[in-house]
Length: 328
Ligand code: TYM
Image 1 (spheres, rainbow, N blue to C red):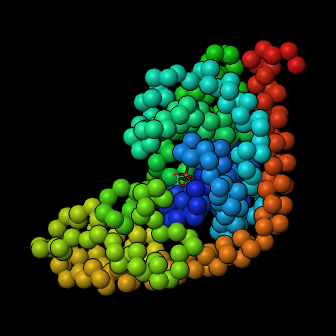
Image 2: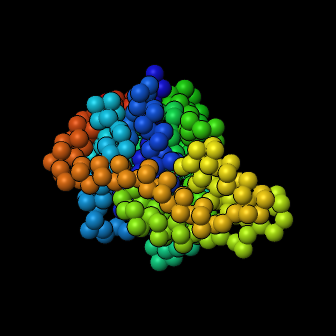
Image 3: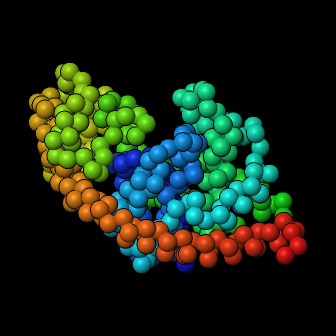
């Protein structure tokens, strides 16, 4: 059976990008795969080492995982910081990750621009820790959104290097995974780029009907097509991406025809979309709040997850130490 690992940083509420890029796949994979889904709390420290909301945000992710349909009997739901083996493996992997390749990582360069006063070593070695997260369970499938593609490519480089250095076929190569043919990128409603928390443009799974409507109505549009079958500007393409996800084929085709015949009213499209998005978010939102009330239950799940994750991690780490040549 293939093994799956993925994680989400506890930086606050989760949004539609997190859902469609990652969680949607978690839910399907849990039926057929050995799954480890964690909360990347240590990764989140690379932006703010001091974070009073670390614990609260961690529990929020557990509540969201459950509200979206993850079954804690089928998968291990755990906190990264509860599995010390990950960090020991990270140390060893750091010896085969080179400064130059880490500096070339696009997310590193973006973060370095965003936080010029805090370009810390954790930020630089972020892809190494990600690799450790994955291979500590010898996973080969990693359900993530498009923005994580380069991290996964780096992980494969580190893994191949490890196998080559020790002349052993020990770790499988981890590949990004999506049930859709391509990795997903949920766009931003403010025109270009991706939906993200730090981009400040996200629709959260906890947003209520009014907030959703407000956000969707504020979506950037253009002045409308002036000739039939005019190619779409980026913001309009983005709205149609949302339609594809949330509306039926009929409704999608209706708005496409309206666009192609220059009759489209963007406000009609937006009201329609807001309603559809709310229909999707509402049941999840209600369950998130329900689960979040019960902190003891969430803690219990994390404890069970920790046991499952550690028993797998301890085995891998022991083998790694033997391969490296520690006397055990
Ligand atoms: P994070 O916390 O930024 O995002 C969690 C997941 O949500 C996906 N995602 C999106 N997918 C599509 N469209 C979007 N607009 C969008 N925004 C976010 C991300 O691709 C991700 O799958 N480095 C990771 C966390 C991590 C990890 C790992 C993942 C740490 N270790 C090991 C997999 C395996 C991150 O920061 O994701």
